[in-house]
Image (cartoon, rainbow, N blue to C red; front, side, top):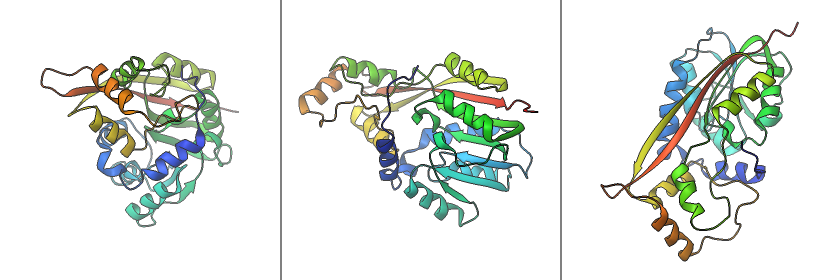
Length: 263
């Protein structure tokens, strides 16, 4: 379970700073977004909130491929919403807000979707309850999220260096399912997939993580700059493949569920 307290100001700052570099680095996010899109089944006039829209790639796919016409793009970082605005030419209402404090009326939307954003939330259980609140009866909640084994190689390598958390903790499939059911969702369907990506070295991996805003946001993180010695120890601890490159594993959990009848 992702129990470490997260620094919400750091999350907002990280993604704001990544707005310019995000699209060039977010290959996995696009791949997962395409897969998530194949799992959606919504009428064209459904009112949909894209939570954690980032630069608007997935929002655009909801328009162009899912043919949805009533989408609200929500993100915690205003510079990301500026990118969404530029991409979509004012075709989508923008909402700068924290998905954990949804400024949305109860029983007012047909679906909330999110592509690789909810792992940055502090309390998934409370979030799921709030999503249940804003969805209409039989509303659809669809999202992708990092699973507990995501970036396991990087986490293990850092564990050889010091005792600070350097990689965020993520929930398991079973934990997510339990929290969804406790929040009142029905017909909960979950699927886990492992994506493995090769990098030239650890520096390239960490540059990509920084470029998409995926910083360590635990309040227990080491606030000091990483020393050269610590970084060299990390490089030595990270396993190298036979071809001299490294592999990073990303567990992605896809979730589909419906809101319960409230009356």
